[in-house]
Image 1 (spheres, one colour):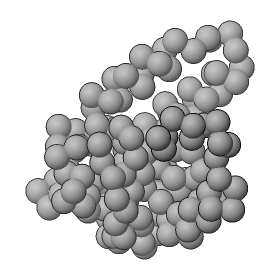
Image 2: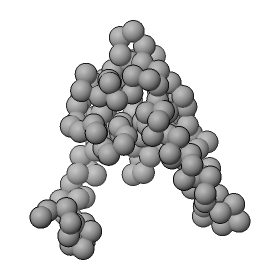
Image 3: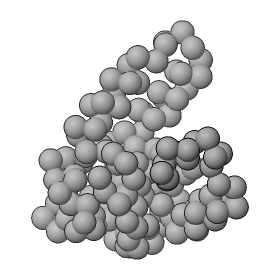
Image 4: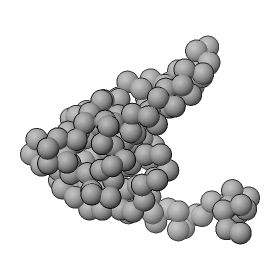
Length: 142
């Protein structure tokens, strides 16, 4: 699993270097898409297949399911690392995540996340101010 957080910059062509610690995770290709809290998710292709299977199971008759699939799937973009270990982030996704110059590349279970530094700082502060419910963490720390 990828873990850690790394500050990087986006070049003038919208490319972000994937940190060395994460390169093997996405070396066979990846899918970039909108994430929660205003970040972007990067899934390796194998993980994306599992995501697609779960999205396909959502009921087409449920408006909130359709809206979530639309949000998550319509923003998806397939990519590969270039020779300099960069990934090109489409303009629509950069705008969604408010990525202009600087970016935080963070690891998460089964995915990477791209954050604008102010949103990253706010997300981390929010967890510190309002930690998860104790029952969600019951089996986390033994």
